[in-house]
Image (cartoon, rainbow, N blue to C red; front, side, top):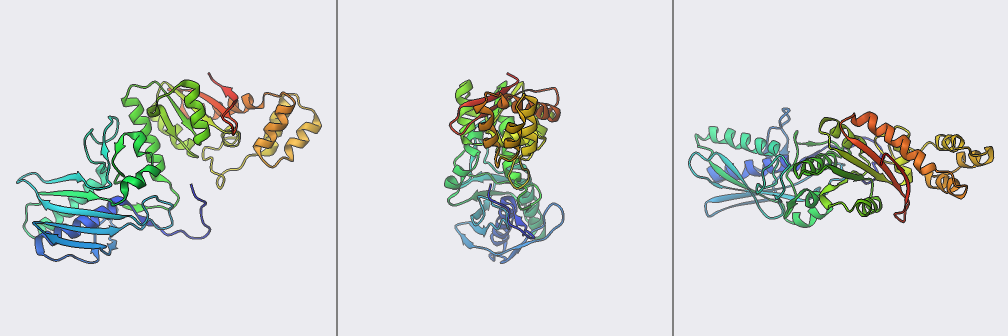
Length: 361
């Protein structure tokens, strides 16, 4: 996750809002022969933003419109992508049906809110698009029976930067967004992917998942347990988002994996592990060393350290099992958040992927 800039942050528009704008413009052109530019839509909470069109094409009985996504100041992977909607007449009585075009994924695994084989256009964006099309249809006394194909040129490549592949969404991106508005640095899409990862694992009948803070710890925990990819959750810094979801939808066993710094933050009660939102308490780590029997000089050296890794190295040279104690404290914090429905283990790995702390196995 990129560093959050200082000062007021500009909100943006979700992929679902952009798709709704493009679909609205295309359907109106299909009925009237003219594209509204800019096109104005109504969002679920009553806002009425306007979007300029990046393309407008009317030919062969269908209409296509495009909108460039503006995610505001959020580090969204789809910021600047073109969201394209093609609207064509559908069968009588069919209502609004959806298809995946170029760069939009297809669901291939159970456990998501969409059935296997469906285009990865989530329910909220579908509802927004259907409502917009129905409103335009009423204006023109039309039936509103249409097929809407959403495309995101380059989306298959962009999807490699997301968790879609792990979730079983192949061929491109998902069209997301419940409110239509992107709140900068809310990281809602990442947390959404964490939740869907749990759902997919549960639907597959897995009883053990592992959530890691980064690639090194993920590779190490996968090797430790020989876990399939579907059992791996790319948690990043959002430990709280995972644990709170598991409190509602438990799974038999969770292994939390991370480096010394991130797990030390969890041990100290932080559920958001990003550097801008939480810092390791060196005095707290020094106190843990004291509890393990370290002498005053060692404790003072640890208190003056710059990083958790430095404290850990101090402990290692004197054979104090600091990693196990940090893991134990982190597990206690996790259990207090997740409740009793999920057994929790915490494992700590160093930068070379070696196991240096463990609790709850």
